[in-house]
Length: 192
Image 1 (cartoon, one colour):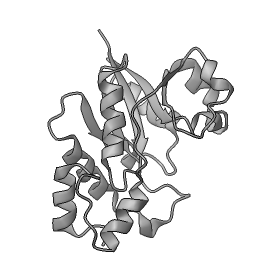
Image 2 (tube, rainbow, N blue to C red):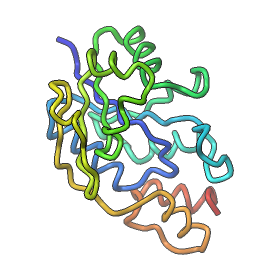
Image 3 (cartoon, one colour):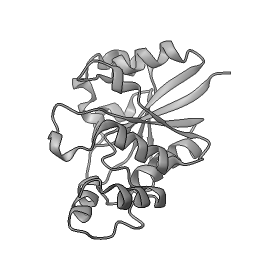
Image 4 (tube, rainbow, N blue to C red):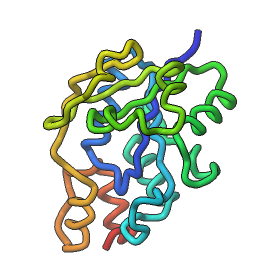
């Protein structure tokens, strides 16, 4: 039987409890068997200086996941051409893991922009898309698509930008990031 794997893409700069709540919700309260948190390499539209090195962010995601059995960190995009497109990443994963079916996980703010993505017609034809509602965002006409599943996952008003600001200003990020991540940030000095 094929395992149903949800792909939760993000820069996770750094990973925080809001990310982990969504990942855990999708892995335990939907039809998905597991969730892979795919750490995205440098996005050409984001400022480089605000982004920690790829492997540092991956390390923090691994620490956040710990021994949670149905969550996994993935660096699949690190070796792909930049910028990496979701459809290309999915093609690589399907080839590497033919025993799995892959789905996308995205926020409701991204769903209306999906038609602008590379090969969005193939994405919608071949992959389920699990959407977590985000307050203040209309889902648009794709919310009724047969491959789109909308979930009311618990959300936090928390951003990685805010956490980086706290770290720069020497404020505590306890309870904002998983405990293992907080310890690593304190020791490493990342984002200071």
